[in-house]
Length: 74
Image (cartoon, rainbow, N blue to C red; front, top):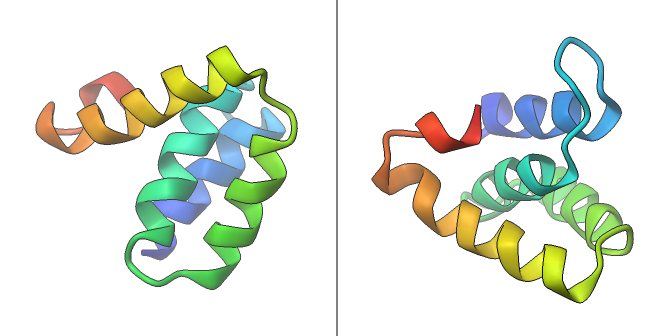
């Protein structure tokens, strides 16, 4: 979904919101799950910037976000 990918970009670049690579990963991951190939590429870029521990936290965040009506992702 384009809006999710846009939020991923905002968190990745730190424009408009504070940079947060965990949230960027989460938003890109959610967009990628809808078939957004650009989000998939961007998620993979973010993955290379995360430690293994951060990646696990980001994956957990991506799973939790929809269940918490996205409050933990903003």
